[in-house]
Amino acid sequence: MADVRCVRCQEEREGLTMPPFRSELGARIEREICQVCWSEWLRHQTQLINHYRLDVREASTREFLLKNLRAYLFGETPPDT
Ligand SMILES: [Zn+2]
Image 1: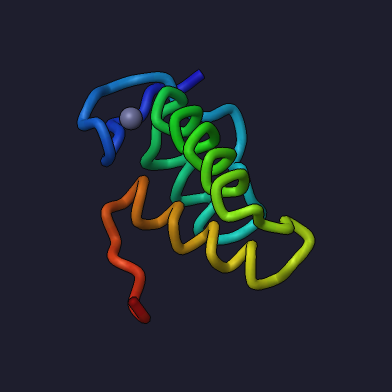
Image 2: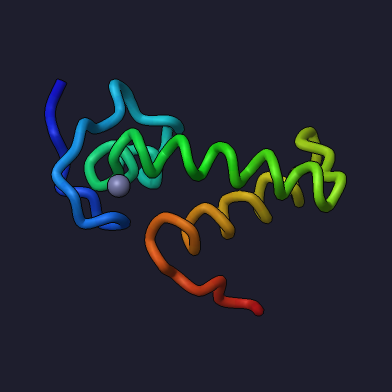
């Protein structure tokens, strides 16, 4: 498995085995984010879902989580907050 130079932790570490989503963002995560940071995000995501009692079937929830993902992994500030 290829190592990635992770943009979040700046370490050279094992990357993901496959993109987590079928999208441009998914491909970017596979290219730029290591497994360690990805698992940290998944844990963080679970906390968000529990904390805000989110319904993951809602489109608004998916949007909210994607925005948080970008902020968490890439340091991007959500545009509308
Ligand atoms: Zn990392």
